[in-house]
Image (cartoon, rainbow, N blue to C red; front, side):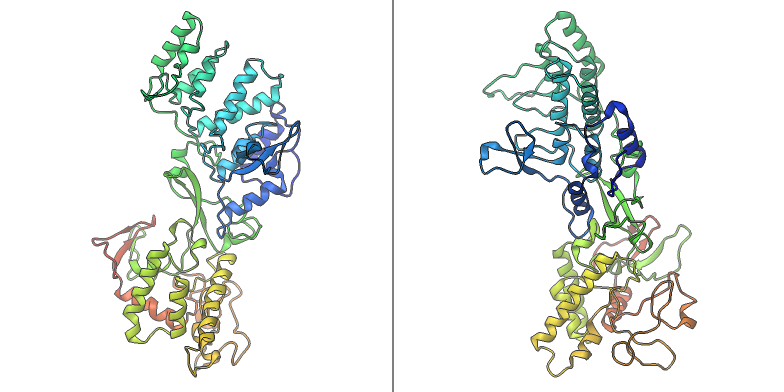
Length: 509
């Protein structure tokens, strides 16, 4: 296998199987090892960008050569994605495997309406009928891709100009019986749904079979695989070898530690955020892809003891606060939508403003950035934490520049409203007995624990270091908001599997 500095997001066993099998040999290394594909990979997994694996590229085919940059001539342009380009030319199975792993739609269409399965299966038919020069390795790679797409439940009834895969398998003088049976097992329709007012009648696939004997054989296969029967179960596109229902569709699974980190650092997850953020994956049944999400959230402050099955009473609003504690682009699928965040934050301000417990600069930033930072003790990725700190403190700076603070000093505002990298107070107060020293004013920096990096006095900190009751120093406004959400929020039960149960789903706002 060609050595590359880039690690594909695929099981090592699968990479070795494809690259070391002589029957699947390519003329050049797979594009999954290239710089260009790696740049796309990083953008797709980066939680701050979340580029789509369904990207379509505008390319043109140069006479006598491979696709090149887009032409200004519309008739020469071809719109294709990675999954389509991997199914043709010097066919590249590893690209298909990884682009599906990254979340590409198996039925993604080119500019002229073809899917990757359409392209791969057409090439199979052409080569089986001797219309192209023979190439055993090229055919083997093409068939591997086509069968993989079928196992991922590609649409077998998708028609290009009225012609389906079953038409291709039946027609042109050579009947591909192995593929006809496979297509029927996966739901291919022997009779087409043609509108009564269609301009051209497309004959059913059986009409393309010439001999009566072969027609009877086709009908026997249809009876053995009747339309409407359930397809063979889909395999999981993580390529674990398991069925989807027994793998990512069964619940959350850990993000592979040898994959690149979702924070955008370009390091592996093992060497980056694995120690401070537990990233998990699960199957999205609506969009049919594996998505990633962080599990750890800021402290949720149980209201009572833990039950026999790991459940405990909490405030539902404190859980909601954990869903809007950073910019939405870093929150993943559980991030609170902007409209809901606006309602949540303004309801807090409405209830607490008369009590004068939220600093005006903190309130200004809440309204402007529409998230509510909370101390998280390095449980968030470095990239997300720095972005949260940068955007929040920039909003505080805009409050200072607006002149709304009157005669209040800049230092006083920054100490009351600015946050540090881990979401708590930027300028922390010493927690030693009878000590009132403040970072940035009285001393340069407080001492911090070498293990958890939280600033505190060791005598009190060592009892809670790494425990559930460990707390990072918050701003007074943060502490006041948390106290309000905990004491006056709606009581719910948080179960060990992360689900909530309650007799009432009405929120306090």
